[in-house]
Length: 133
Image 1 (cartoon, helix red, strand yellow):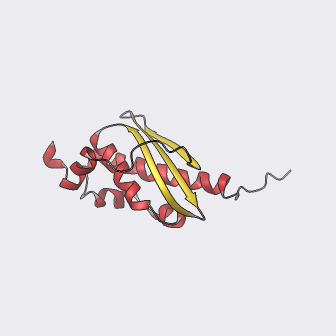
Image 2 (cartoon, rainbow, N blue to C red):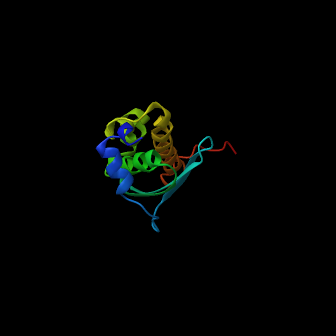
């Protein structure tokens, strides 16, 4: 099993970055994969359309931990537009690749980040479209 993962993946599994909750987050989003039981919670602090801080909590396999961890590094300091362009393949490639059966982990991380940005745009940034009342 260990030969399926790169040294970068193993580093993020053993030493995940940006783990924990964030009290002053202005966006919190949860994602999960019901087929394998992984659950991911991202906390973001976005100011003026830039990711100023990001933390995560996860219950999942090593690939889920690694993808969630490296994704935090990839979006820190990025604009919300840049985060929305991040793909699951880019996350997997940043780890040196993932086995096909673990690609759902990078998809979960990317999808959660996209959902977080949408939540920010619809609530914090005040871009909710009018209800037509």
